[in-house]
Image 1: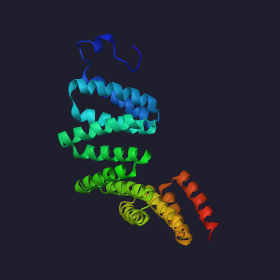
Image 2: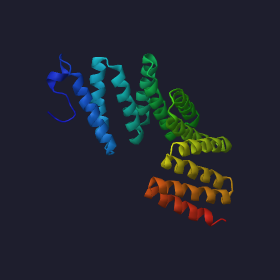
Image 3: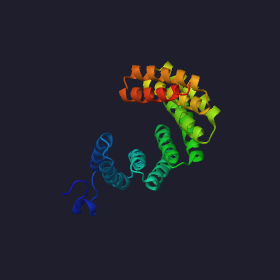
Image 4: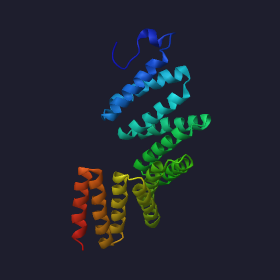
Length: 234
């Protein structure tokens, strides 16, 4: 039987067992982790079909959410949004709050990539609200960072900076060094845009220090390159 397809028996009167859907889903996850997004998409499609046949809404929500995530990487935005919108509807029907936070985050990410910043912002805001309600402060920090990205694109620079300062506070509290580095580096970028190169340089140095604690060699290298560029204007 070709990989990723059902046999004639399975597509006939006898539907595949739920375990088959789980197997497809888990294979999709493995593909996604190694950046094989085409393989992930194929396996999620098979998993989605099984979950629909069995009426398993919780598994279908997770599957549709990942279909949306993969669609973002494949730049299949219409497919991604359609899957995520259905996942959102099912989350609300089943009061699945934790999965709703993940779905809203991915919806926001797709809208952000498409340049639909005003649509992205409420997605991230709802994720923040959910994360606060369940005590997930790391999720709050991630959501605030995404809100700042949308606001920055909307030229709401001061609002974006205020959120990034809160992200910095949360990351320091929970020792999330990579997130801290990203928050501070984004502050440096905003300061640079405002023409405050002294603050930008200071913030970029702090970002490099955070990335060193995270042992993120690529982020360290990129930030040092950005610092050199800023220092040219001091």
